[in-house]
Amino acid sequence: MNVEQQIGNVKIETPIMLAPMAGVTDYAFRILCREQGAGMVYSEFVSADGIIRENAKTLSLIRFNDEERPIGIQIFGSDPEVMSKAARYIVNTFRPDVLDINYGCPVPKITKKGAGAAALKDLCLMDDITTAVVEAAGETPVTVKMRAGWDKNSIVVTDVGMRLSKLGVKAVTLHPRTSKQGYSGRADWSLIRKLVRSQNNLADDGMLVIGNGDIRKPEDVLHMFEETGCDAVMIGRAALGNPWFFYQTAALLRGESTPDTPSLTDRIEMCHRHFELLIKD
Image (cartoon, rainbow, N blue to C red; front, top):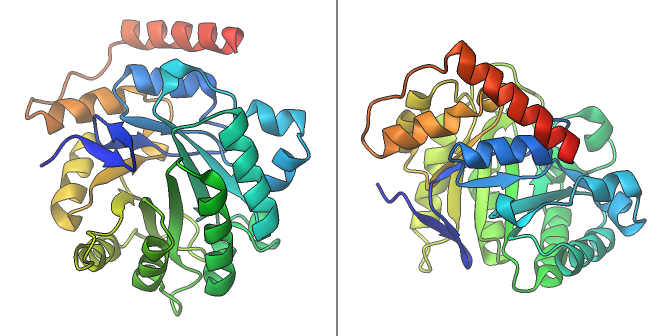
């Protein structure tokens, strides 16, 4: 397996990424995960409307240090013009390595506004938003995080994959549940495999496909690679309170045995490190 990957011009040394999680992936937590071996980290998702209004709280979620690189900033919104302005502002002001569009959030307060996973109900609008962001981002690679569809009767994985690839998106992260599922039921990894195959059939090799969903232990990452053929894996809930997950998984990818479970001393030291970073932030 090719351990190093590349999104546009951005090299990812280890194909294990920290997912964007609201209220979780702040500066302190991102640093801990990078120190433990995450190949790339993402910010909490931020509102395009808040960005163009230069809302102080929204902008505070975007700020990062060079030691966090490579880092992606994730934005959400339902208006192509607003998303374009927000993308341009972020690229010019913060210069992240990657700009990510959220087409996956199932939370009603987001989807009721037509953002997040609701974009999967109107693929023409999704095309317009994506085009606006890609054009505004310039040389900064654009990626997408998405669900499999709005509900079980509207699985749009391959259709959306083809559209995004043609529009210039460099990588797509698929959480293979529908918006209606939320986090219930099982993630259908076969949909990740289906997306990989559809991209492999494209003349230009298509986008990178990043798998996400139902990763609970380091061994699950290896299983996802084997079962789906994805290029990288994004870790969300498995990293909560457990930044060692990246260190353990990286060891498995190198063919080493799984490192020992962190001791009580290790956990205390990590808590102290986390506290120091929170104060610094």
